[in-house]
Amino acid sequence: MTVATETHTLPLRQLLFKDLEQEFATTRKFLERVPMEQAEFKPHPKSFSLLHLANHLAGFPSWGLDTLKVDVLDFQSDGTPPKPLGTREELLEHFDRTLLEFKETLNQSSDEHLNFVWTMKSGDQVFMHQPRHEVLRNGIISHMVHHRAQLGVYFRLLGLPVPTSYGPTADEF
Image (cartoon, rainbow, N blue to C red; front, side):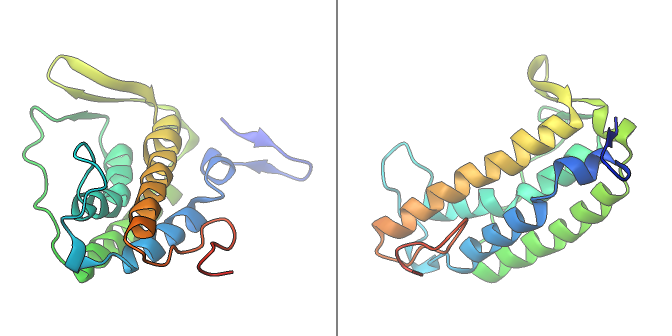
């Protein structure tokens, strides 16, 4: 599916993911500030620990890559979850490495590939069955922004400066 503009037709990847660079760069700024000495902090018993949340955020590029590389992600048959990353350096290295591969793969993706109906499941239980481009927008980018905002709340509760996302924060004004 392509969309005509006044001068030319844009591929779906360019139309839908113009903000990709900004969103991933902002997420990296948050990961750079993760206070590892407070890795076990949880604002509520039902919340992720700070380290678990940081690992979750660092994993979004690799989940985007999985969305582009496989047609069905089945948690029941696709092995064990990755080992948690324990240092800021590990978080950033994993994030940077998988983001580079994700962006390269996305840039090679055709409209047909992005419109393919992708599935996430565990055995017979289907969690997602949507076109790839919707999974990338909602399940990867928007989902990452949601958890990045949570990390900002953790920073605020710990008395740490919150990085700017879409404009200055009270800490960077």
